[in-house]
Image 1 (tube, rainbow over the protein chains, first blue to last red):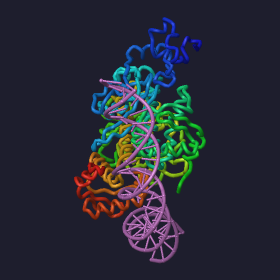
Image 2: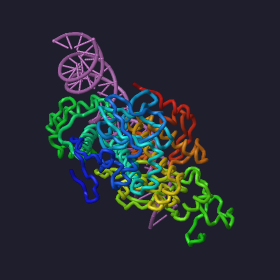
Image 3: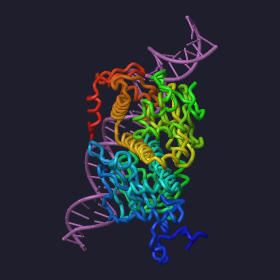
Image 4: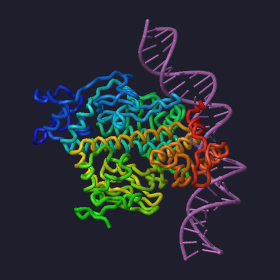
Length: 256
Length: 256
DNA sequence: CAATTACGTTGATGTTGGTCAATAGGCGAG
DNA sequence: CTCGCCTATTGACCAACATCAACGTAATTG
């Protein structure tokens, strides 16, 4: 296991949860394998312990909701393991998926604006999250500059993420959207140390379609087409990226 | 020209240029007519003065850019008067408008995430903005809790705003989008004390289309149709909302 | 003030992706 | 294992919106 000269844990493989010394057992963030992805980036040991003091954990089964639109906003949630979707029910009762979220990502920030969540968060597989009560997080970030900065970067990153989705929805055609979606998933898997070239989709075609502004049939057709063209392998939810350059090429191909 | 005790240039509310006491001349935010919309909400006089100490102003002519994609991120900007668009150039060189912004709104938050702006901000009419250097804002918000909270709410509100646009782009048809757009503009005018039922559009049909994921012809046709149906009056950029309930009815009308 | 350019409107036509429908595969409950 | 349900695939058809094109009107410039 890697430790720097100040005794700080660097990276822990999630596959070896029991390889921690007894000293480490009392803390959570300090040894979390996701530290470099999470709010804790750049914090020293002392500060990490302060975070630990109020962060708790919770497990969710597949299908369980973490919060619902309208719920009072109390905390932000860091995904430790698993996979979530966030969605909004439109006035007409249609579900629109606003995001898919994986380990290391933080969800719930939509609730800050008026003390209530505006979307639902649902686990798409058995998951575990870290609960960060918001008032304490705000308090702590007044004292720890690097935590404050990190938090602001996460909020801003969410804004940027939403804007790229706006561009996708506003200017891309169906196949471009699907290609972009697959490449995005692939890239996020890689960052987390998983295979970028083969993975299981945790969501249905309908949820993908909702997220991309398409109907499920269109998603299915695009998958089949990419499959026929040798760009990907598809077998239900199991995806294999065979030609990522080919997928990327679809994005730049301006039709007009 | 107005200068505060530390030699800093001040600019006075254009609506009340001569109504300031000599004491008031030293401050800006405290008497800004937009205080209730801006970051300064809920701050007491003392704190407002601390804000004033590092906030400066700048005027922009129509067409001028406040910042460009790629520019180093240095400050957030509060719009004092005028109207802005933010947009992104996609890889294919197409412009996609990500937002229209009016007095009291804060732009530039996309730049926090990686120290560079990801979009362009352009004045669509002669405008004036308040420059809030970001490191100082961060510093101050560590000391003033209500400023911190307000800032976080602004970031969160931006996230929620982007998400409603995602829903619009992902699930509404052309006429619904246009109706939603007009109603949104109207409502924001009302909040600012302007007429909610008649106003000048500051952007072109093409910019509206880019924002809504439509082509300019589609925007034009929808305007004409609404006009024929007596919902609105249109004369180039001059818009008159004649039947806002009728417009709202278009939104709930689910076609499927 | 005339000339030029940018912006807006409207019509004819075409394509993308939505809609409807039928079938099949996978997975959980019993 | 088998039933039943949810999910996915595929085809035929259609509507919404994009595209192409022509023309009209406002704004800008020299």
